[in-house]
View 1 (cartoon, helix red, strand yellow):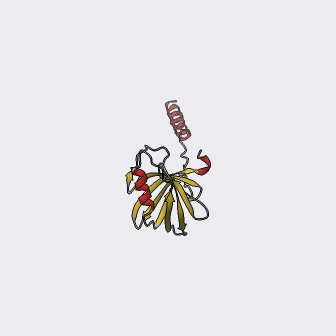
View 2 (tube, helix red, strand yellow; view 1 turned 180 degrees about the vertical axis):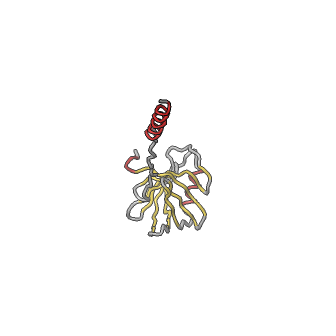
View 3 (cartoon, helix red, strand yellow; view 1 turned 90 degrees about the vertical axis):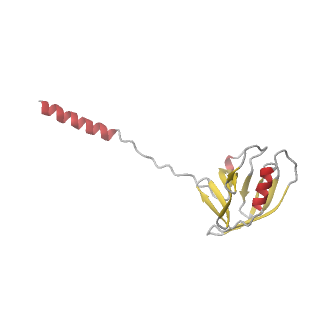
Length: 148
């Protein structure tokens, strides 16, 4: 009888152990496309930017080679080209000329946009723009259809 109870207990433990196994669901990170995403600026030259803006600095890329966004106060526009190997040229053309209380990051962002951007990488929700091998700007993506 003891042997029967021990065997039954062992079988119950095995069954309970199998039933409690948690299934791991793979959660794939969202990878936003270059076009159709609002890219919010989070860092310039590896330094995080402050959040003290009337409007968060961002950049968007359209399907016909135009780039536009906001520097934190003023709107800007320009042009870009890319190829399948993620090579990029970015041409800053101009911006509005409003005077705002916080212009430091705006000036840094404008200077970074004028640099010789040579390539980009999209890693999940982040866009990184490079000049050669040096990271110039880092952004986080927001689907444009969800932007107010």
